[in-house]
Length: 478
Image (cartoon, rainbow, N blue to C red; front, side, top):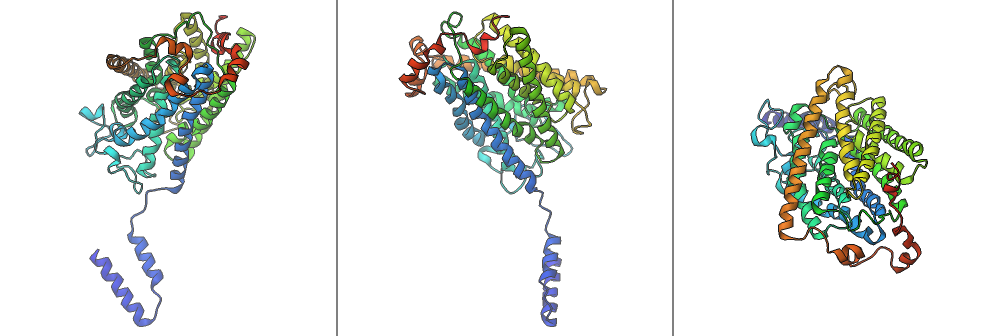
């Protein structure tokens, strides 16, 4: 440094003596001396846009779920998605992000050792050391500011527990759900995110999860079925119709979800470029294949393709491609979307036959779809798409299928046991579900003091309460 200062002073003195403009020389000296800035504006822009797209998915989910329930519960159902944006938007900053991604790696270490293989630390509590000027020190996203990576991951943390609400709508207490949301995001989501993406033990096994097949969809789907079992079915579930009150809401919701999913999957490349392009393209075609397959199944088996059906097929395709989006070729993406749609279609049919009240089929779509997508990643993944990934069964590495299964199984066990424990503990200090009369009248007014449509809607559209649900009407004929 002293040498640089000396050279600069000598150049300045000589230039003044000779009457030479030395500003360009000084500028070149400063440029040469300054370390290169690792922040890439293009990558940063893409990640900020992707973060906004993923956040939009939660209001999209609110419309999707809100349209599927009865009119007297629509606000309560949508609130269960929106409240996640408030709760986790704060807790992620305070401790969630640190628990998920803070890890101390010794020289030569790629993954956390000991306790840090299972949970992150608290060095980043309250975004301590998480700046907007430099990348994260671990190397998760080396070309964008640390805060950009943090806020992108926040959007995943927000929507994941909101997905669970679909299994327990129309009877769960909002107070109980609020506390479940806070506890589940802390003790289930953050550890799982650490295991898979935060240098934890599942990542160390070589399991592939590009954008959340295990972390988001399997965890929420499994937790949903456990929550539905612990809380119990809706009153008169087996004898009374529970028709969607607003199918256009469902279609609006799936449109917003599909749009936001481009950030969900494309942004998981953590940079703009060829990998983001691959994930973007695979997201589109797998979703198209999923919706088309579901529609054909309904058309052939039940004579009528339904709007709710094709929307559910699109969702199955989105869920399926999530773990594979950055690892497979386009033809693989089509097959993953189509195969998963078939399995989810019959999973919904089985749920209806069993009369199990997973209200909006969260497990048959997210749990089953995430499982099939994660396993099929072990078949279709190829290093030709992503050198940081691995080859699957169809590219000479059958061992990846087993590795994927291990990650899936661990997620099932952890999410199921953790959710059961959280709900049982909450049940000791508060009611998990509303009173029978409240459930019969609807949750909007008793829980929130407001209603979506007013009395006029009840007289003009009351018939929607008496028919079979659009979800089950296409299934009960099986």
